[in-house]
Image (tube, rainbow, N blue to C red; front, side, top):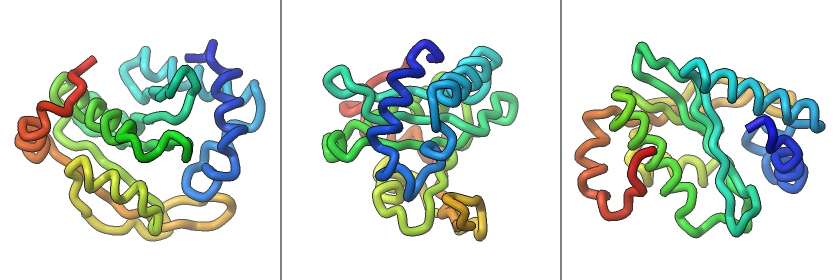
Length: 178
């Protein structure tokens, strides 16, 4: 939420060097005004049934997040993006968060396809996509610019047909829908 801009900026500042390698967040959240503007864009978009951003707090400290981008309610597709502080990793938090968002998008909103793009070589992101049941679909060459360098992205996706058997199998570890 926009009222959390100071906390969001402090979070990005704390992780700036770490995040710099794989996500554009540090280049976009450079000061309080930029943090507030980004959160306001997400709030406005969510209010219009579009893109959204969710935070992950560990012991009261903002430690990461999930973005739902390219949100196409009519077409039933979206893309997920994530980041998590190193000190919060290894606890299953991101796996649970991503499963929760997929469950909501497919189970509640009726989406048919959820995409995941990972910078080639970002093994943690790729492992997470696989862990939640996404399938590798290919490489988007020269997909985007990060830190002034053109990067390739590995594309992963899961469809509703893929998800329902997985979600039934993982029902004990699911967090439900929002």
